Amino acid sequence: MVATGLEVMLQEKLDELRNRKVGIVANQASVTSDLTHISDALSAAGVSIAALFGPEHGARGEIADGEPVEDCVDTRLGVPVYSLYGKNRAPSTEMLADIDLMIIDLQDVGARFYTFLYTAALAMQSCGKHGVEVWILDRPNPITGTNPEGPILEPEFASFVGMYPIAQKHGLTIGELARLFRKHFGVQCEIEIIRMKHWSRKMWFDETGLPWVLPSPNMPTLETAIVYPGMCLLEGTNVSEGRGTTKPFEMFGAPWIDPVELKEALKRFDLPGVGFREAYFIPTTSKFQGVRCAGLQLHVYDRSSFRPVLTGIAVVAAIRKLYPDEFTFRAPSATGKSHFDLLCGTSSVREAIEQGVSPWEIANHWEAKVSEYAQLCREVRLY
Image 1 (cartoon, rainbow, N blue to C red):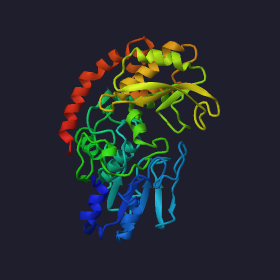
Image 2: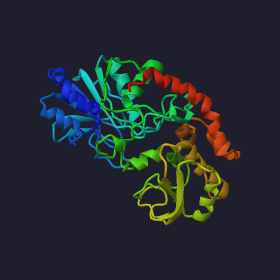
Image 3: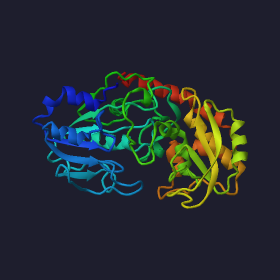
Image 4: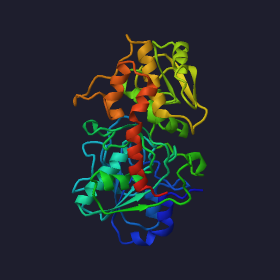
């Protein structure tokens, strides 16, 4: 079984925590192999916990999808819980006043737009400014630490769903990303990465022996994480990405889609490692809530050859071509940027889709920059 950074810390570094005032950035997936939350494990070991810090969905996963996270008191430990997904995205001077060590233990899913990456980065930056040491407890990239894919974020499209120029499917662990942020993107702090044991880059999460704890409400399974780096692009459109169903990001559709027609269109792209099944669903939340949608479900036959970003772009391109009168990209936000562009980290993908460019040609366009990015990744790899 893989030993996460949390397990390694509990086994080997507790003595270093005895006289420290510890802050913890964590959520419901920040657990040991026997499913004990990091805060409870450290408290039971006699470590002095000064505060918890909650990313999107809260420090124990108690906040529903889409709801702001508010400051509160952890009733179990009696310590403050500070929100990093509300008016503050980074710990303030006041929040850090009683802390001399910040422990960050967050489960990433391998996609650039997963907000926990930037909660970690902003916490690192703030701790660096205030002289607080940071420990990153490393965890597996559930979709392997190989084969980065997708456009590299362009600086003008930086946001909380993508702050740094990394690939859409980034191919690193959260500890390796922390090293990348420090080495190349100006995030400065005193940091120690607590490495995993027995993890290798080609390992999928179901090969680690660890229990899957959904790191966010719409990430229920490893299968969701496998398709997420591409299918999340539907969030930038008026097509349902399956939120409010039991198969978010695997199921997608809209009331005006003909599943048979769409399946035939996608078959012509000859996408590797994936097939599509006619599907119908009624979302309980989000787009088309309570309305019957028609669409498809992805079935990944060969996860090693499957290309999630290429597949996501193909899905968007096919729907737009078949239903030009119904399909739309979401309107630009107050920033003037399309949400689809923020997810892609560039406007070039949307513009190419609008021009009818083949998904394969769009993918070929990013290959050179992904090769350059892969070289940066090799500099920060821990495994």
